[in-house]
Image (tube, rainbow, N blue to C red; front, side, top):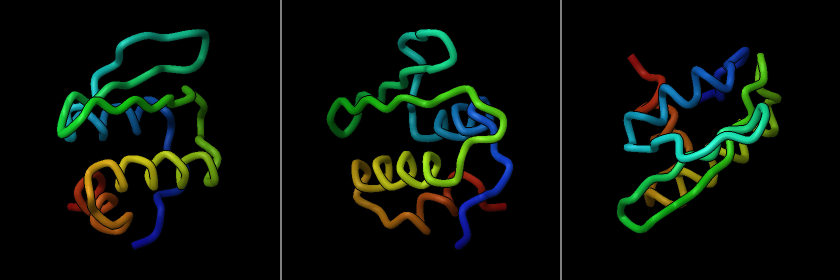
Length: 81
């Protein structure tokens, strides 16, 4: 599945809420999200509009690895209909 284009940082944060990521702090235009399960995991999402495709790909790869799924499975879970 293709990585969504023209996705904003705010939209990504809202989508990651499905995996129990919660905003724990913000420094300027960057928000740090924390997921407590299966083991505590932190990611930083820039509030850019739109996110650069390389930045988005790196964030999705990190989250997919943490949750033991492929990037395609993660994209389907977050953005699939």
